[in-house]
Amino acid sequence: MTGRGRGRGGWQQADLPPADDAAAWFTGRLPDGWFTGAPEVTVDRDEIVVVGELPPPGGDHSDTDAGRADAAAAETGRISRFREETRDRRIEIAREAESRYRRKVAWGARIGGTRELFTTISVPVMTRLRQPERAVLDTLVDAGVARSRSDALAWSVRLVGRHADEWLTDLREAMGRVEELRSQGPE
Image (cartoon, rainbow, N blue to C red):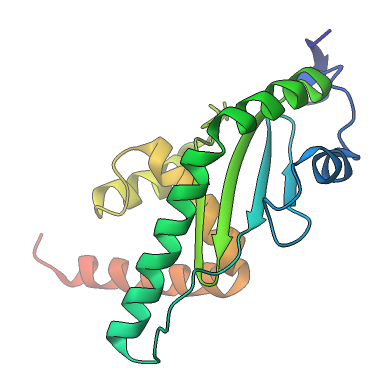
């Protein structure tokens, strides 16, 4: 039974079955020939994302700008074809996995430099932010980097995940420079 229990720091989701065997389960469950190897399976408490490598499309895509554009278009087309041709089977497998692991399943595919996810979920996350933290989000909204605080928080998490230390140092320096410029402006 999926439930919620009062945990340290607030309400936490409890009683989820373990999913440490999910990668092996999907590898065994998927039809042969779908992917060129074992899929990449990422699990959190809300979702399982399964991404597999597809065989590259045929054709000669020379190392020119036009050739690279053709290759990207061919990769996108192959992924689109895979998505349509496997839809019913993916739904069937996802239902089995959702019953087994009590998490939603999302799919994706990659070829070369192209990676596409299909129908991933967006999970609301409640957080309490103090004024300095809200000010960071509001700065991103005011600067046009994000449309809302929610957007700014998601953007921040993605960016920090990629460039934690370097980016935060650069951001602090930039904010200091903005403050200097504001203080020099007219009253």
